[in-house]
Length: 129
Image (tube, rainbow, N blue to C red; front, side):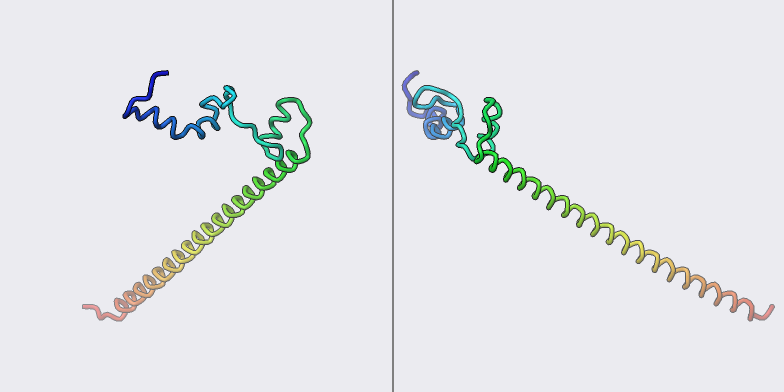
């Protein structure tokens, strides 16, 4: 590796984020190995690791996995209920708009019928010329 020259921004950036890059497995750890740090037992990642390695899943990992699954189901259920509320609200708004349009149409028809009746009465009472 060459020496760091002043203004070598890429190298300075790597050095500034060395810990983060090492944690992501992009730079070697102090012992020279690459890869991410393993999640401790009691996490979903550890439960997947147990299964991948053919090991039995410990109680802490199973509990963490079940809790996470339950949280995802609750979130999905809440989202489903919100979508249903939104759908019902939109349906109600469409129904109200349709009813309002029907009332306007009925009023328009009544006004037209009244105008036609008035015109018919006018022409019926008119004297012939």
